[in-house]
Image (tube, rainbow, N blue to C red; front, side, top):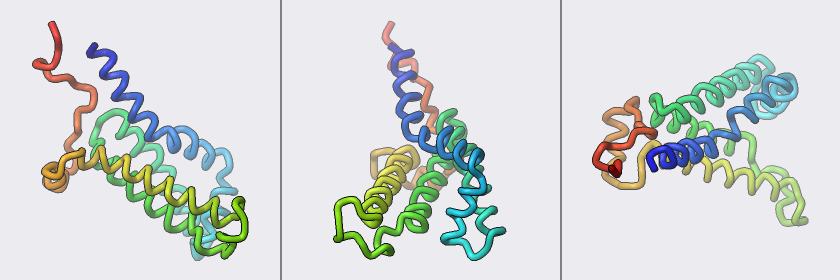
Length: 160
């Protein structure tokens, strides 16, 4: 049963990061110039846009690896939650196209759903950060780099 529990813990974390590692990171690597062009929609210059894409790659690869491995996973999930929020605000601005009410397949509506998906994903990462109990919030701020040890099973929970 311990193996199944560990497998489920890994699968849940994999589902959270799969968008970033490998898919989004690989897309940025294989289509770097396109990613920079997209970043230029918000960035003031090509140099800043390039820096944003490189920073995004770092976050997507390193923080996803932290969440998957359990190494400083709470801090990594905190960064990924912020990343999801920032990308929602910068690149999923559903209010800008002005066509939200014109049709069901408008750009504004597509961005609307992407915006909320980003925020929902941020919420999933925050569950790793803070857990599901109100009293665990202060624990993160006291020790942000401590792992949740997602793949360990206390001896008292192992059936003999």
